[in-house]
Image (tube, helix red, strand yellow):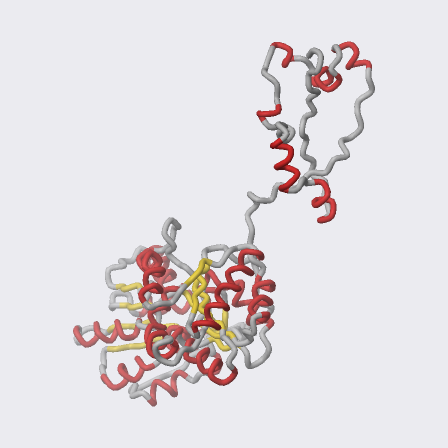
Amino acid sequence: RGAGAPVLRPLVRRATPVTAAQQASAWPSAGSRAMCSAAGSETPGSEASAPPKSKEDKLPAEHMLSGGDVSQASAQPKSKEDPRVYRPMTETVRTFLNPAHFFALLRSHGTTFFTGVPDSLLKDACAFITDHAPPGSHIIAANEGTALAAGAGHYLATRNIACVYMQNSGLGNTVNPLLSLCSDKVYSIPVLLMIGWRGEPGKKDEPQHLLQGRLTPSLLDQMNVPYEILPDYAEGAFAVLEKAYEYMRTEKAPFALLVKKQTFEKYSLKDDMGTFSGPDMLHREEVLERIISVFPTEPLITTTGFTSREIFELRAHKGQSHEQDFLTVGSMGHCSSIALGIAISKPQLSVLCIDGDGAAIMHMGALVTAGQAGLKNFKHVLINNAVHDSVGGQPTGGGNVDFTAIAKACGYRAAERASKGEDISA
């Protein structure tokens, strides 16, 4: 546009795969970018490098590239494809932490023992651990408190830090062993806590998780357990784990990782882990449908997870009232105790508790309490599918448990087992 006018070259990004070496050579270093800035030039395509706008801006791109007139530009052959390679813009791409990478990072710090209670936010990492941890190095515990105690025992025996995983709703089960066992004021036992952060503020979740989610960081603060949010990319996870293990080795105390929704890359269990199945076996929803057909108006207390959701859906489908139902959406393992309290207070009514294997195992001592109460109006139905169904299908250990024998030993007057449709009808 006159003597000495700069020639403009449009910056074009191309979706050409590049190697790390090409990226390093093509992308200017911080120093070279600083020198360009100091010399008064800017990166191509920035507003600072463009001359003042004028009527000539409406000329074709060929004219701007050549500095000549339109007729000259149109007569020239088109330039070849731009050979320059540009750094991919990946900063805004959603990332996920690879469970295999995370598992390898933990093992690199000497963590070879894993225990806990499965959680939906941790299911991908837990599934990978289940599939790849050597035999004897992974225990799916009855509850979070026993998991923490097992992790402490591992440290006492080996001086290696264990990883204990849980949902934040199970943090309450760890309060006693955290404060009276692992604390640096008592036995100084470092444990890495991996906590699924349900009810995280600003995220949509179910009502039973909202208060727990808001209070989770302050609960850890009150128990003097430092924590970090686990990043969803490899470099960030590496840095946070470096900090966590440095603290645990120096202070000899627990450290927590808060895991947000969709932190981990998807991973599924390789097998069904011993889930009950058979051509004559009924699905849980079919069992529930038979129960409410026999007891349509009796008080019904249902356990955590899919059981309560399916009862609600069945009532709605049949046009039945929800008034007599109590759906225990939280408080895993306490369903039978809730039902027992109602049965004691309403002796004229038959009260049904619909329990699950994972929930019953979590607080199995409640069976002793119910058995010793000796109530005639308390009926306890336990649906055993041997897995934590609503949080990823991890095994509960219930597949090898004789619940009827345990119930009788705890004082239940009668206990029967049914595994097929005709058994239930009988």
